[in-house]
Image 1 (tube, rainbow, N blue to C red):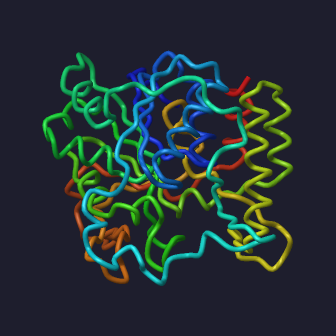
Image 2 (cartoon, helix red, strand yellow; image 1 turned 120 degrees about the horizontal axis):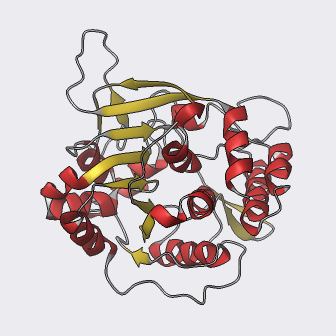
Image 3 (tube, rainbow, N blue to C red; image 1 turned 90 degrees about the vertical axis):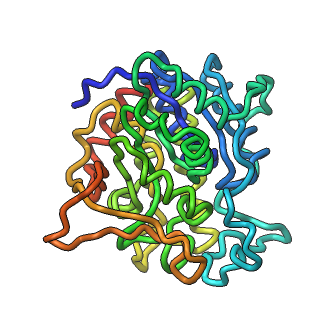
Length: 332
């Protein structure tokens, strides 16, 4: 159980799983949620920004949204680096049109609310520099906004109470044979972020794919009956259908179960009640940004004699039933 009451900044690249995280944060942590900052990632920045605004609007508004980095810090400057042929094919032709894991826009009314005029990185630096109390930062997209803020003023790390991160994978990977998508889309930024002088908790794919959710779980969540819960359930259903269409399995079984991993929402739940985390370890880790086959890979030092130098904890195992219990309580 958590007793932390610090204010929160949520950094997203809104596609399906980010929407779940925003819904949960605005349902359970609204009074603590200072702002939502947006970066590139699941889709280009104009799409992730519009998607974020749509979800905030669904949840009644009232939380400022800041647009941030439209791309990686430097990764795009190396010719050919983004054309890694080992990248998982997230887009395919179906019915004469391109189909991707994440739609360009969420199936919600177009946003009538507007983002703040200040750049997200500027907002992060200014807010963390001048806060009277440390702030918790939840980063569930590429680390571009967070890392750029840390580069502009490294001293802001002392005002980060905790940095909760969804990214990387030790044994589990997705976008390439070596990397998870958030870290892959800006490896240098992920390297900078994990080196920040503050407590860090990482939810890698090893944790987020340790429990999977299907349409029965979607119905259980939607049955809560609030707009947020109903849309949350519909996201699970839609994502399950999309994975089946693309032939992407999370459970690696030869049956008809295309269950999904919810990824980002766990970082938000962790701020409320960490009892669903069954296993985590304090370990040394870094991110490869060499531009080769391991580009964006989370490297974890698992040697028994390796003494952890920083305050980075990596989560490995979650409790599905506790997650479902929390969601059905919090989304009311």
